[in-house]
Image (cartoon, rainbow, N blue to C red; front, side, top):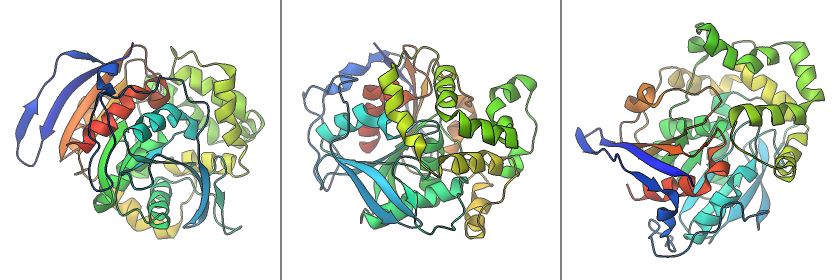
Length: 354
């Protein structure tokens, strides 16, 4: 059974310590959830949560034009429920959130889970648009999707690329972000910071970033996309025993015609080896300064995350609003929402109460 350790809750503007919870709480204790109204937060009842791993597919998959994309997305729960946008990472897809979405929909939330650019059924509208994977572009996609769906404000939550995207939405558009849940905390970066070398052991963890910097790496990823993704799944979540159908369900999303281009551009852009698009320059200038996140936030970390990730003490001061960090124990790796869906869903519901 997975457990949550809440390490701290801080209201920085008031300089008031809300508390340190040393007790370990079983994730299933957060099963008290009820229906949410369209105007407010979810309210807990004694409803039983869906069993982890019970969901095989989303009930509603849709498509909508938003900004430069035709976005494919899952839309779960009541249409008038408080909106939650769940953002996946690489090399994963929307199916990381199958169980989380079911839990939140059962609690009365409207849950939007979009395929990021380069994944699933999401496609670029103008055929000549740069297959851009830079961080500001992914965040702007979320705002464009919210505009297209007429969602003025939402809770945003994510892991890996999705966590960074959620961070940026919260930092640059705080009026559009009611609250945030972020796995591995604060992941906003800059190309200037990425110029600084890391100790050899840390550089070793980023081996694929250097591989992707080469044309051999691009060709290798294009040829062995599924094998590459399965390797990353095993390295990033060494104790997660996923089966072949679970992997195949997500791997189908990598067959998107733009997937390889977006992934390669993402990592090359980070290292300054590929240019972004000029209309994102102002956003990147702001992000390079490491802006604080003022919206209520819960950060999560799995106790068996095999992917590169910062220590929570490094980023705690980046959150200037009410904040809590939770360590999720029980052998939980990088794909935290799929490995510990109840803990992830509980964080979303709890941050909504902040």
